[in-house]
Length: 112
Image 1 (cartoon, helix red, strand yellow):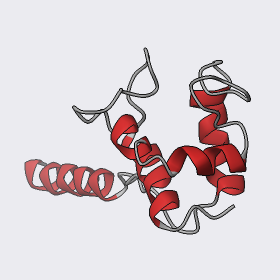
Image 2: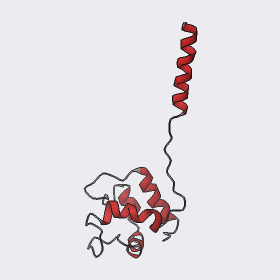
Image 3: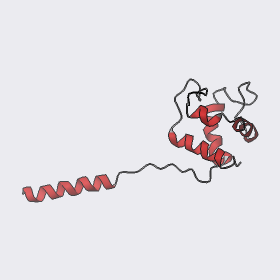
Image 4: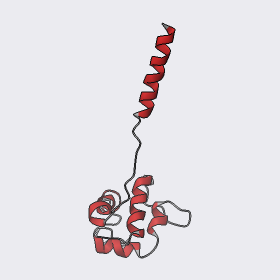
């Protein structure tokens, strides 16, 4: 009986480990319209911090977001690097995938 149960347990454990879903982060074909706009709306512009006309700079439109990226501070801010004001301000750091998507958008030429 022990000889039958041990291989059965090993098989079940191996199967569960093999089925573990790996998380992936898609950073290909990132555009403002299809990816970044929703990130900014959820984390930046809807809070009133970077909405249209904000004195802090707007992320409410593609043109506004493009201007903000040209200042060269966005990546340092969202990564909470020491010489930058951490963004989103007063909130937790964005998850790594979201940061990677914004960075891919910027390094990819900020396509609309």
